[in-house]
Length: 627
Ligand code: GLC
Ligand code: CA
Image 1: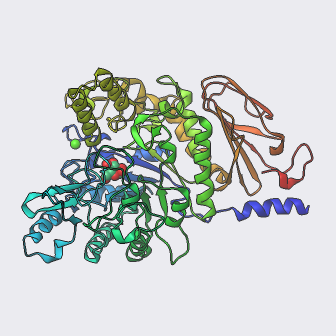
Image 2: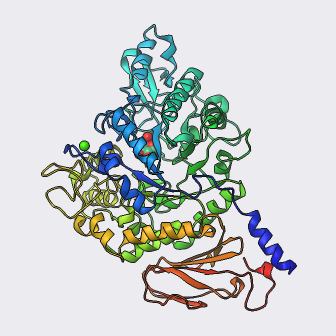
Image 3: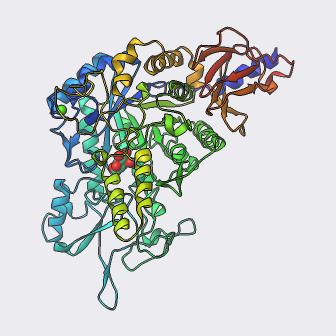
C-alpha cells in the first residue's frame, strides 16, 4: 500500500501548474503564403480571418503570425521599417483589429512575431541615427551599434572586429558619409539596435505595450539572445576573443585564411542578456497576461536555456524558448548548407536532454520541427521516407504531441507538406538562400567546378528557407493555385507540384489523411493530460531506429514507441516497464486496438501510443522500479 502511495506522490511532484500556453497548440502562419484575398499573389490578414474556422476545426489555441509590421521585405518582414504600422501587403490596422476580434471571439489567441534585435535600414530610427552622426538629433545617435575603423600604419582600414554575419560576409557595414561602420548580426539591411542605450530599450517596451494594449496575447521574440554583444572588457576566462583597439574583440580564428570568423560567442548570450530580459519582463510582460516566446537560434545549450526560463519571480525573463539542437543535427559545425548524416540515438539524446533540463528548471519545453526557416520534417527526420509517405508524417505527429511542452506546428505541417523536390531558380526568394546561391556562382567563376553548383542545388532543395514558405494549397483548383489566390494571379512563390493531393479540402474529407490524424492527435492529447504534463523518460537509448519513451502522470502511464526507420522492426517492451500496455493510437490501423502489448512489430515509420493505468509490474518487481 505504501508503495502505491509513493508512486502517486512521485508523479504528483512532477505535475506542472497549468497555464494557458502550456497545454496549448500553436499554429505558425507565414502570412505571405497562407491565403491571398486580393489577388496580388501574397497572403494577407483577411486571408487569415477567412481561415480562422479552419484552425478551430483542427484544434489550435494560439496563432503565431510571422512579422506583419511595415517592412521593405528584404528578409520577409524580419526587417521592420515601422513597428506601429501594418505592412500594406498584408492589409491595414482595421484588418488587424478585425482579425484580433474575430480570433478572440472564437477563443483563439494571437501572438505576434517581432524582431527587436535589429530593424530595417529603412526605419526612421536608423536614418536619424546616421543623421545624428553628422550633428543634431542626439537622442538617436546611439540607437544603433556604430564602430570606428581600425587603421593600420599604411592607412588601410578594417572593420572594428572580424565577426562574420549570420547570412554572409562581414558583420560590419561601412557608411562612407559618416566614416563609421554599423553592426548587423543578420543581413546588411538589418542593422542591430543598441540595447546598451536605455532610451532605445524604452522605445522597444513602448512598442510591445502598444500591441499588448490592443489585446494581442504575446510575442514570438526573434533572435532574442543576440541583444548583448561582447566588448573587450567583457573577455574573461569563459569567453574567447582577442581585444582590439576598436573596443570590439576579434573572434578566435576557426576558418584560417580569411578575415571574417564565426562569432556566436561574441554576439549571442552576451554579458548583459539576462539583465535586459529581466527588464523587459518587469517593464512589459509582468504587467500583462501575455506569452513571451524567445527564439534562440544562435548558440543555446540546455544549461543556458535554464537561466532564460527561470521561474523565480526576481529572475523571470521568458516563458518559453525555441532551441535548435534537434534541427541542427544534419549540419556540419552549425553550417546549414553542409549536410551530414546523423543517427537516431543522437536525436534521442538531444531531445531527452532538453526535455529533462527544462523540467528540472521548473520550466516548460517547446516542441516543434518545422517553421519558416526550416525544411519540411518528413524527409528530414524519417530518412528515405518517400514522397507522400503518410506514415512518416503521422509518426512525426505522434512524436510531437506526446513530448512534454508547448507544441508548435507550422502551416501545412498538418497536411504533411514536403519540400518541392526539384530545384528551380524561381524558387529562390529568400535573402539567405539568394546570398548562398550567389556565392556558389562566384566560386564557379573562380574555377570551383560544376559539381559545387550541383551540391549547392541539392543543399538549397533540402535546406533552403523557401521550401517551407511556398503557398498553402486549400483545394485542387489549378486556376487559383490551389485556392491560394485568385484566378490567374501568380503566387509570389510557386505552388507545390502535388498540391491537388496535398490540399486541405481533399484531406479533410479523408479519414485516413494526415490532416485528420493531426486533428485526432490534438484531441487525444487534450483527453489525456498525462501526454501534456507527464514526466518524460527515454527508453532504450541506443536502439538505432526505435525512439521510445514513457510519460507518467498521476496514476496514468504512457509508453510511446516510434519506428523512425524504413525497415520492419520488432521491439520488446523492457520488463522494467511492466506489463498491461494497451495501444490507444497507431499510425496505421492494421493492428486491432485493445490487445495487450509486450512485443511490437512495427512497419516503416509506424508509431504507437500505449497506456496502462496501474503502477503494478507483472513480474512483481517493486513499484518504484517502474519508471
Ligand atoms: C530569425 C527568423 C529568421 C530571420 C532572422 C533575422 O531567425 O526566424 O527568419 O531571418 O531571425 O531576423
Ligand atoms: Ca494579398
